[in-house]
Length: 95
Image (cartoon, rainbow, N blue to C red; front, top):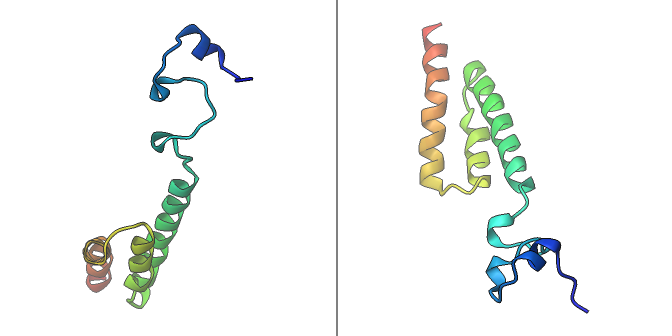
C-alpha cells in the first residue's frame, strides 16, 4: 500500500520531481542546522578575533581557521581575514 499525500492526490503526475507532500529530502530541501552552526562559529570568531587583534595582535589565528571551517579555500580565507581585521589594526595603531 502506497501512502499518498492530499496534495499529490489533487495533482497526480508521473514525474518524481513534481511530487508534493512527500517526506523525501532533495538537494534543495536540506536542513539549515549546519548553516546555522557555521554562522554562529563565524560570528564568534569575528568577535574573538577582533578583540585579540586589538589587544595583542594575532586575531588571524582565530578567524582564519573559522573561515576554513566555513568552506573557503585558503587563499580566499586569508584575504578575507586580512581585510576584516584591517580596521581593528588601524584603529589600534591610531589609538
